[in-house]
Image (cartoon, rainbow, N blue to C red; front, side, top):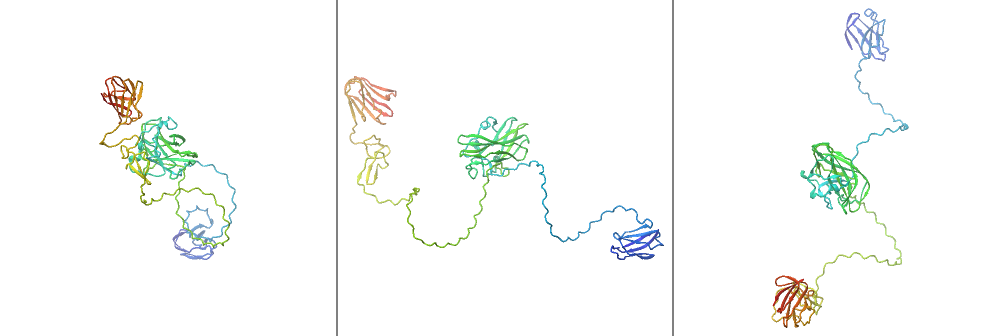
Amino acid sequence: MNIKNIKINKKNYKKMTFGNVPKDGSYNALQVSRGITTQKITGGTLVLTDIQTELTNDVLFINSNSNEVRRFPATGLFGATGATGATGATGATGPAGTATLTGATGATGVTGATGPTGIQGPQGASSGLVLYMNYNTEFIPTRSLFAANLVPPLGTLMPPNNSPPPPSNNIPVLSSTENIISNPALTQVQTLITSNTDAFLIFQFACNPAIDLGTPQTSIPPGIWDLNLFCSASQENLINFYFNLYILDTSNNSLTLISSSSAALVTDSGFPVQQTVSCNVPLISLSPTQCIYIGVIARKITGSNTTMYTYFQDQAYYSHLHTTWSTPGITGPTGATGSTGPTGRDGSTTSTGATGPTGTTGPTGATGSTGTTGPTGASGVVSTVGAFGTTGTANGLSISGNSIILAPATATTPGAVSTGTQTFGGAKTFNGSIGFASQTINSTGGTQTISLGASYVLISNSTSFTLNLPDATATNGAILWIRKLSSSNFTVTISTGNLIFNTANASATTFNMLNGIKTLQFYFISPNWYLLYSA
């Protein structure tokens, strides 16, 4: 190290040279332009005292650490310690020491006292089966929306003003299957809330546990249900909402209230925000006719009329319900089939034991399906005429075995003439005469009745009497003639249990065949008689 122009006792020395002064006791040289001296080092400081002519009463100190040269009076060798200088820069990190073995773990200390319970964290969301609120799909079995005042608590709820309403004003479905709709007119429902005192039943949804959950369910597990509703409002923080959970019995269309949720404010006035409300659900067993029904209820706290916007079946804003039903897991792939084990050796044959008793006959198995019809066999030979048929057939006759069966003719089918009442269809022409059954009456008074099947009634007496028409035995279209054979100067009272219409179309239960009338013709259309001819 070189130090130039150092002044000692008011004289300048042009040059002073010295090297580092180590602490190990080795020699170093100190040179002044007027003389040279050396001193063995025994510590960290080299003391120079041999330049008496120039350094009378003064001493130079060389610090072996900082190479600093200082001049002090000889009489006061050391003054007060000066202030600590600024810390120098950190030196380079030395090499890592050699690792040694880890010592044995000390004994566990005594457990300290339990600290105070922290504040309750935010409530977590249910993680069970998700039911999607499919506003545009009807619940099955189809049910009309309940009137708001008939939903428990009865008489406390008002009907909503929704645009659009659900299809056909029927209850929409809660389903485990998504059904996304791209038409905003169907996914955003606007509800106008006008009252600050009334609660409005704004939405109704239902699900059938037998068909809407993927896997049929017979009970509701206990736990927390969360309704996650995407909604906004025309004015924020004015509307709150909650939901009620009911059991809907489809056998009598009744509702039973199970639980009510917490309430939430609609906090945004321009962008859909997911709001969550929750309720506790107990363990509930379900009968085959019992379904799940929820009613979403809204109330305006204060302010003017406010519109609530709720979103269903939208790709980004799909309102839904978390339940306590478990989510079915995905079936993993079938593992590889293991190798077939070696075939065991055949057992030795022993003598056959005695045959055991025959067991009881098992139940008859189900009848197998009918086999295909075999080819038709050769026709047999008709050798006899069977009993006359009772009903008409399209062909007028039929063959059964080796018998031919005649069928009676009717108004619509051909056939033979039977001994019973018949109506023939189609026009008929007879080349010979046609005879009709007739009845002759010779009465001295009282009442007479026309016989079954008579078409002509001949009256041979000359005394007035009553003649009953054959109401019960007449057939539609029957024609009946009545004629006096003797003097016409007596009255025959024609009587019926129904009505007789005369030629003027006037009706009565009787018709008098007065003096001078000799011949009458009646026509029967059930249940009445019509007079066609009188002379």
